[in-house]
Length: 241
Image (cartoon, rainbow, N blue to C red; front, side, top):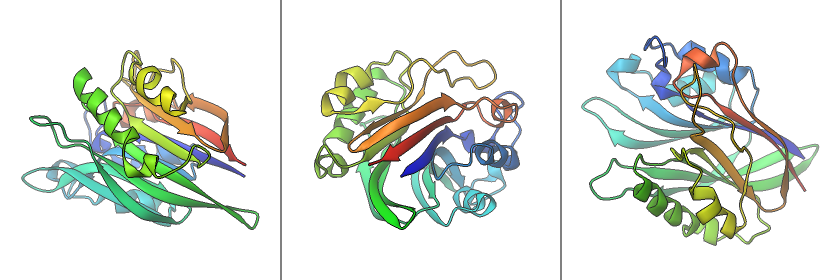
């Protein structure tokens, strides 16, 4: 039973080079890879800079996703922004994982159960979409909170579980120190995602554990993806067994 997951910091639909707002470019960038599930970060909701679009709904409608979750994390004078999960499969048991560190920007992880249907069979995968902080100590605290949160501790090691998003972890410290000891595997190594036009840093990552295997993972570097955001998407093809 295979499915494709994409993780993408869309930068509110604002291009990384021209700084122009154009949500259609994000739509094209995602559509090219035809994911079954999309983890999105920096998604605007009612913000003037993005024409007050409800971006989670706009993207779900344009891309044909039947199921969506939005998590508002940073409140602005008008509107807010945060994380979103789009899925072709049903989502339930939503859980907001508190990741805010005092004096730092508000951060939370968006967790849910995804019921993957293929050929008359259904498997449930636990999903956690995150956007971690800019400071190293902050990211370490946040990662410890993730692995000690109910969506992780409430699942045994055989339960399919994916943690992905913008980790801001340029030096790849979080995975080896905090996630791999908990049974997680990384899906990308040194694939670079930032800045999108000339990527030099691996900020966007996906980790998984449980009864699933990775078939292929790569950074999406189409021409439109290089201008749609300041990040490139990461794509991973999994098989559940």
